[in-house]
Image: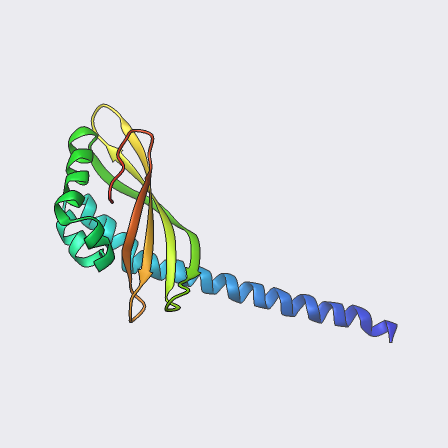
Length: 155
Protein backbone atom coordinates (compact mmCIF):
# COMPACT_ATOMS: atom_id res chain seq x y z
CA UNK A 1 0.00 0.00 0.00
CA UNK A 2 2.75 2.45 0.92
CA UNK A 3 4.30 2.13 -2.55
CA UNK A 4 1.11 3.62 -4.08
CA UNK A 5 1.12 6.73 -1.84
CA UNK A 6 3.46 8.75 -4.13
CA UNK A 7 1.21 7.94 -7.13
CA UNK A 8 -1.91 8.95 -5.22
CA UNK A 9 -0.26 12.20 -4.14
CA UNK A 10 0.86 12.85 -7.73
CA UNK A 11 -2.67 12.20 -9.03
CA UNK A 12 -4.17 14.60 -6.48
CA UNK A 13 -1.60 17.29 -7.32
CA UNK A 14 -2.30 16.88 -11.05
CA UNK A 15 -6.07 17.12 -10.57
CA UNK A 16 -5.77 20.21 -8.33
CA UNK A 17 -3.33 21.79 -10.79
CA UNK A 18 -5.65 21.10 -13.73
CA UNK A 19 -8.68 22.57 -11.91
CA UNK A 20 -6.68 25.67 -10.91
CA UNK A 21 -5.44 26.13 -14.49
CA UNK A 22 -8.98 25.81 -15.90
CA UNK A 23 -10.29 28.33 -13.38
CA UNK A 24 -7.49 30.79 -14.20
CA UNK A 25 -8.01 30.31 -17.97
CA UNK A 26 -11.73 30.87 -17.60
CA UNK A 27 -11.15 34.06 -15.58
CA UNK A 28 -8.65 35.38 -18.15
CA UNK A 29 -11.08 34.66 -21.00
CA UNK A 30 -13.83 36.49 -19.08
CA UNK A 31 -11.53 39.50 -18.53
CA UNK A 32 -10.57 39.59 -22.23
CA UNK A 33 -14.24 39.41 -23.26
CA UNK A 34 -15.20 42.19 -20.83
CA UNK A 35 -12.37 44.37 -22.07
CA UNK A 36 -13.38 43.88 -25.73
CA UNK A 37 -17.13 44.26 -25.20
CA UNK A 38 -17.22 47.05 -22.61
CA UNK A 39 -13.95 48.65 -21.49
CA UNK A 40 -12.28 49.40 -24.83
CA UNK A 41 -15.43 50.60 -26.64
CA UNK A 42 -16.51 52.74 -23.68
CA UNK A 43 -13.09 54.31 -23.20
CA UNK A 44 -12.64 54.82 -26.97
CA UNK A 45 -15.85 56.86 -27.02
CA UNK A 46 -14.72 58.86 -23.98
CA UNK A 47 -11.27 59.44 -25.48
CA UNK A 48 -12.85 60.65 -28.73
CA UNK A 49 -15.08 63.13 -26.91
CA UNK A 50 -18.23 61.10 -27.60
CA UNK A 51 -19.51 61.00 -24.04
CA UNK A 52 -23.14 61.25 -25.12
CA UNK A 53 -22.82 58.08 -27.21
CA UNK A 54 -21.00 56.34 -24.33
CA UNK A 55 -23.87 57.31 -22.02
CA UNK A 56 -26.54 56.11 -24.43
CA UNK A 57 -24.82 52.79 -25.18
CA UNK A 58 -23.36 51.84 -21.80
CA UNK A 59 -25.42 53.45 -19.01
CA UNK A 60 -28.10 51.38 -17.29
CA UNK A 61 -31.55 52.83 -16.65
CA UNK A 62 -30.68 53.04 -12.96
CA UNK A 63 -27.55 55.08 -13.76
CA UNK A 64 -29.52 57.36 -16.09
CA UNK A 65 -32.05 58.06 -13.35
CA UNK A 66 -29.31 58.85 -10.86
CA UNK A 67 -27.21 60.91 -13.31
CA UNK A 68 -29.09 62.73 -16.07
CA UNK A 69 -27.19 63.13 -19.35
CA UNK A 70 -26.32 66.79 -18.74
CA UNK A 71 -24.75 66.02 -15.34
CA UNK A 72 -22.73 63.19 -16.90
CA UNK A 73 -21.58 65.35 -19.83
CA UNK A 74 -20.66 68.24 -17.54
CA UNK A 75 -18.31 66.06 -15.48
CA UNK A 76 -16.34 65.18 -18.63
CA UNK A 77 -16.44 68.75 -19.99
CA UNK A 78 -15.00 70.01 -16.71
CA UNK A 79 -12.28 67.38 -16.60
CA UNK A 80 -11.34 67.95 -20.24
CA UNK A 81 -11.29 71.75 -19.98
CA UNK A 82 -9.34 71.86 -16.71
CA UNK A 83 -6.97 68.92 -17.19
CA UNK A 84 -6.95 67.59 -20.77
CA UNK A 85 -7.86 64.51 -22.80
CA UNK A 86 -8.43 61.10 -21.27
CA UNK A 87 -6.40 58.10 -22.46
CA UNK A 88 -7.27 54.55 -21.35
CA UNK A 89 -4.42 52.58 -19.79
CA UNK A 90 -5.68 49.36 -18.20
CA UNK A 91 -8.44 47.76 -16.17
CA UNK A 92 -8.87 45.11 -13.52
CA UNK A 93 -11.80 43.28 -11.99
CA UNK A 94 -12.01 44.33 -8.37
CA UNK A 95 -15.05 42.41 -7.18
CA UNK A 96 -17.49 39.96 -8.73
CA UNK A 97 -20.74 39.03 -6.99
CA UNK A 98 -24.35 38.01 -7.54
CA UNK A 99 -27.44 40.04 -6.73
CA UNK A 100 -29.45 38.64 -3.83
CA UNK A 101 -32.66 39.78 -5.52
CA UNK A 102 -32.48 38.38 -9.04
CA UNK A 103 -29.19 36.46 -9.17
CA UNK A 104 -27.73 38.71 -11.85
CA UNK A 105 -24.01 39.27 -11.82
CA UNK A 106 -22.61 42.54 -10.49
CA UNK A 107 -19.02 43.50 -11.21
CA UNK A 108 -16.89 46.26 -9.87
CA UNK A 109 -13.99 47.10 -12.13
CA UNK A 110 -11.25 49.69 -11.95
CA UNK A 111 -10.09 51.58 -15.03
CA UNK A 112 -6.80 53.43 -14.96
CA UNK A 113 -6.47 56.44 -17.24
CA UNK A 114 -4.05 59.20 -18.01
CA UNK A 115 -5.38 62.71 -18.52
CA UNK A 116 -2.94 64.47 -20.83
CA UNK A 117 -2.31 68.14 -21.43
CA UNK A 118 0.76 70.12 -22.42
CA UNK A 119 1.76 71.10 -18.88
CA UNK A 120 1.30 67.87 -16.93
CA UNK A 121 -0.13 64.36 -17.16
CA UNK A 122 -2.62 63.33 -14.48
CA UNK A 123 -3.45 59.81 -13.33
CA UNK A 124 -7.14 59.02 -12.91
CA UNK A 125 -8.54 55.86 -11.37
CA UNK A 126 -12.22 55.26 -12.07
CA UNK A 127 -14.30 52.48 -10.56
CA UNK A 128 -17.44 51.20 -12.25
CA UNK A 129 -20.15 48.97 -10.89
CA UNK A 130 -21.48 47.03 -13.88
CA UNK A 131 -24.78 45.18 -14.06
CA UNK A 132 -25.13 42.10 -16.22
CA UNK A 133 -27.77 42.36 -18.93
CA UNK A 134 -29.52 39.60 -20.87
CA UNK A 135 -27.11 38.18 -23.42
CA UNK A 136 -24.08 38.61 -21.17
CA UNK A 137 -23.46 42.30 -21.81
CA UNK A 138 -22.74 44.81 -19.05
CA UNK A 139 -23.95 48.36 -18.42
CA UNK A 140 -22.68 50.98 -15.98
CA UNK A 141 -24.84 50.90 -12.87
CA UNK A 142 -22.70 53.30 -10.85
CA UNK A 143 -19.32 54.97 -11.07
CA UNK A 144 -16.76 56.35 -8.67
CA UNK A 145 -13.49 58.19 -8.85
CA UNK A 146 -10.43 57.66 -6.73
CA UNK A 147 -8.96 61.04 -7.48
CA UNK A 148 -7.37 63.59 -5.17
CA UNK A 149 -7.96 66.50 -7.57
CA UNK A 150 -11.68 66.84 -7.00
CA UNK A 151 -13.04 65.30 -10.19
CA UNK A 152 -15.73 63.09 -8.77
CA UNK A 153 -17.67 62.18 -11.91
CA UNK A 154 -20.07 60.61 -12.67
CA UNK A 155 -17.94 58.73 -15.14
